[in-house]
Image: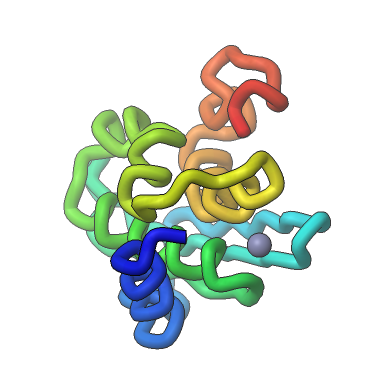
Length: 134
Ligand code: ZN
């Protein structure tokens, strides 16, 4: 594992940004990754098609928690149309690591919770079969 990337991930894991719950979320969605035991819940406050506020909560490995925290920073204040464009590669770039398939599920769990919550299952997959999204 790259040292810099590792430091960044541990920092997000230990000092997570935007961790917690929203009082009155427009959307709240929890997703689980049974292979690793990760759980991520995303609370979104959406107004005028803009993500006004966002929080994540959950538990699991450092990759799942750090990636979810990074994701909240990416989407806060963004229009939903832009949020929809966030891809697997954006998350993996933010983490700065090359991950195997099992770890990719950890990294994308927050994105899945966010997209399934905001757009439904089809929006998350965007027409692709689920195995190709991971
Ligand atoms: Zn994990």
